[in-house]
Amino acid sequence: QVLPEIAEQDGMVEDFHEGGFTALYLERCAKALDSAISISQRIHKMNEVNLEVGRELIEFSMGIAYGAVMVGIVGHESRMAAISVSQQTEIAEFLQRLAPKYYSNILITGTAAARIPSFSVMYHTRVIGYVWNTFLGQIEKIYDVYDGDTEENKRGKDMTKDMFEEGVL
Image (cartoon, rainbow, N blue to C red; front, side, top):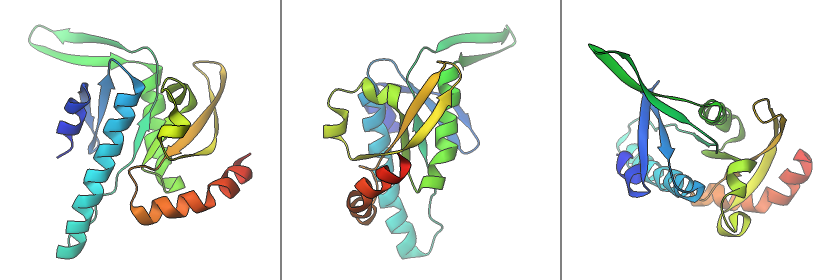
C-alpha cells in the first residue's frame, strides 16, 4: 500500500525488516519527508476503514535522518545481497522506535530539517528534544512533523506547541 508513495518521491526501498522497511532518497530531504507524510495520511485512511469494520488499527512510525550512506553488494556468487552501511540509517531507526513515546508518526533530525528550504514554514512541526549524535559529535535537535497526523491530533499539537516546546527547552 505504501511503496508507491516512496517511488513517487524518487525513493527506493533498501531493506524490509521487523514489519517495516528502510527507504533511501538520493536527491532531497524534502522528498523523504513528503513521502513520509503521504504514507502517514494513507495509513490513517486505512485505519478509518479498519475501525469501521472492526479490524485492528495499523500502528506505525518513521524516522528521517540525513547523511552519507554506503551501498553495496555482499556475499558469494551463489548468494548475494544488497546492503547499506550508515550511521544515519541507525539514527533513523532510533527515531522510528522513539516516535511512539511522543505520540508522533514522523520524527526528523535537525540536520535533515536544515536541508529542507523553509522547513518551519512549509510543515507543521514541534521540537521534541535533543540527542547526542556520537557520529557527528554534536547535539542533534529532533522534530515531530505532524502534517500526516489526523486532523484532531494536528489541532491538539498546534494548540499546545508553544507550551510543549517551552517545556522541552
